[in-house]
Image 1 (spheres, helix red, strand yellow):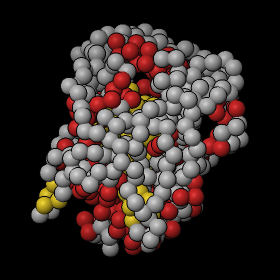
Image 2 (cartoon, one colour):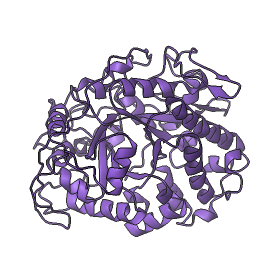
Image 3 (cartoon, helix red, strand yellow):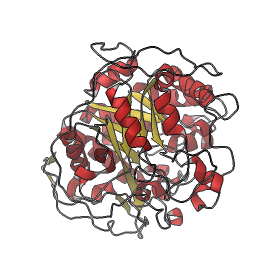
Length: 472
C-alpha cells in the first residue's frame, strides 16, 4: 500500500532533495524548441532537468541521499552516444520453482527464436518494436548526460527506460510542470532521443494529478488545475508524435486508487471538469469516466504509436474484482496494458524502520518458498486476476533493487530486498500471470541502487538478455 507521495522518488536516485516552488527546478534551461503555428519541431535544445519538481510542498523534503544512491545532479546535458546493440534472441530457459500457490509452473525451455507470439502481451511487444519476450526496464535514474542514465550503464540493452513527468502548484497557485523545464515541453524529446540512440523504448510515468498533494483530488473541479493538466497531456502526446516511434505512457499511478476509494467505487459520482478544458474530448462526461476516456482519446488521436496503460493498486479495494470493475468503468480496458507495483521501497528499509519514508507497518519481505504469507504466488494470483479481468497484459513498475541479504534491514543505500532475485529466477511465473514486463527503480530516497547492490541487478540482466523468456 503506497501512501507517501511519489514525488520523493524522482530525486531519490539522483541524490538530491526535491523542492517545490514557482521557479523552474535547478539546472533547467530556457533553450529548446518552441511551438510555431501550432506545430512542434524535433530540436530538443540543450539542457533538460533530470528530475521532477515536487508535487506536494508539504512532503517534498526527501532528506539527504543514501550512500551510493546515485550520482546525478540537477542540470542536464544533451549528449548521447551511439546506439547499443539489440536484445538477444538466442534460446535459453528460465525454470520456475513449484512451491505452493496457483501459479507454479514447470521447467523447460522458453526460448525466443522465430516464435512471434500470439498473446496480447506479444502483440503489445510487437507494437513497441520488440521481440516476443518478457521485457525488462529501469528508470528514475537520470543523469546530467542522458547517454549515461543508469539504465544505459549496465552493459546490456534494456527494453524500457522510464522517467517521471510531474506537475506542481507554484507559490501563486498557478500550474507548473515538466513542460516548463525546456521550452515547448522539449524535455520529452530529449529523453525519447536518448532512448532511441540506445536501442531502448522510452517510457513516461505521468504523475501530475498529485500536484495538489498525494490523495488530494480537489483539483478535479478547479479550472486552473484542469486546464494546466489537459494542456500538458495533449502536449505530451504531441511531443511523442514528433518522436514518431513507439513509446509507453503510464497514466497516473496511485491516483486511480484514491479516486476509487473517494468515489466509493462509482466513478460517475466524482465530478471532473473535462470538457471545458480539453476541447478534444467534447461529448464525454464530466466525471472520472470522462477523464479516463479522454486520456485514451488524446493518446489515440495524437500519438497512435504510443502504448498506454492505467495503474492498478492492490490497496484500492479488498477484492481484485472491485479494482477491475472500477478500471473498466473509467476506460482502462481501452488502453494497451495495465500497470501495477509490488513495492516502491526496499523491504529492508521498512524492516530497519529508521527512514521517514519507510515507517508503514506490515511485512514487506516476501517468502520466496511461497509457503507463508506474504509471498510471491499470492501477489501473482492478484496480478493475474487484474490482467485477465481488464483483458490486458501487465507491466510491473518501479520494483526496488534491494541488496541480497539474509539479515533483516540494512543501512541507507544498502537495504535488502529479494524481488530482483525472485523475478529473474521465476520469469515464467510472471509471464503466466499475464505479464509483458517489469521495470525497476527507486521509489524514495536512501534506497539501494545499481551502484550499491553488489552488481546483483546488472548481472541478472546480463544473464537474462542472453536467454530471454518468450511471450506466448
